[in-house]
Image (tube, rainbow over all chains, first blue to last red; front, side, top):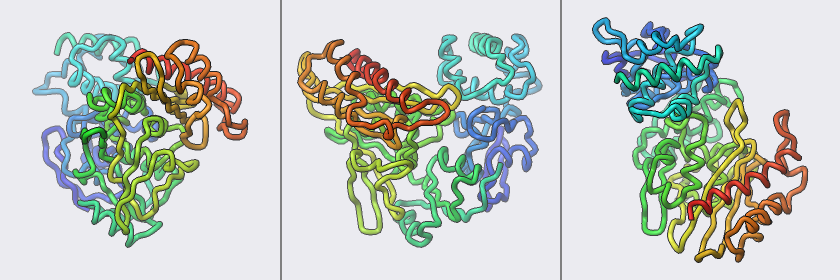
Length: 152
Length: 289
């Protein structure tokens, strides 16, 4: 089945099997491998992307469900060679250890700051409840989101 | 992890979805947000040969206040329900429950209709809809019918919804006198699912509780009313004593066998939590009075 997607501003038409998951289209068809597959069971959030303005777990969305939608992935954040403030803030605050959860963390944080530009620490922790850092590096992740909120 | 192979149909109307259901019978499953179904398919606990995607039927989305009734389209997401001022104001227990389903991303995709039709015992919405006296409007090949939430949840992952039917609306009565409600749960620390969750709805006349509906999920094979607690509350003065008396009677009428038991929580522990969370739900509801 042919589906159309706009990913990071770029239009694509791809032929997918109905059972193909959005994350596999992004990674294996479009070669956008920044989005990670973590638990693959809708829990860890490593595969989070923004779909039509909302953070979603792309391991739990069929590509056919995403037909016609606009997707933003971690690759779409930097502009003209400049990192997005969230990416810089994660760097500045050492908001990652192994880095595997980071793309999903940043995309969920991006969604949080779109909906709540000045979140409290509690709101940040609540907003990131769907993203698991298996290194448990949450303190610096929260600090990074706080810094990004100030800069955005 | 790919789901098993299936044939995919995209319905553009309820009529089309119904005719596809007729055509494919028990081999077909309806796909709404997919946040119960897709994980089940990935783990091969469900292997439908046909998926009928109803996710684009706009007529099944949105929240309306229709006189004394809150009418919620089955494709409305948990996030939209939790954020709705109409739901917060008229059916706070439902907004509470929708706001604690899964996590942010799950609430952005999961839908109330899919959640109720799936009827996971540890899900949050069934107790809220049951306590609020909700009704499920369904349509099948022979037309529409309305099922009270009291009759809808029949067992583990089992509802009154026929294999050839589709939920077309969830109706919550929101008229009459002063009504307060709340939902609270003890979430499983890893999955977030309700080990026990309780929804409480109180009708008030001044300080008098004229009637009460209390329901729980997580504790049993499906959402159930807590009639002992309800009887303790009816006619009582809203007070800590009344709440304590109701919590004391939360498990009344249930046997040890009625409570779920697993490696995380024994039936005894769930029975204990039922009293604790009945008290907390009632306290939270009365704080809103």
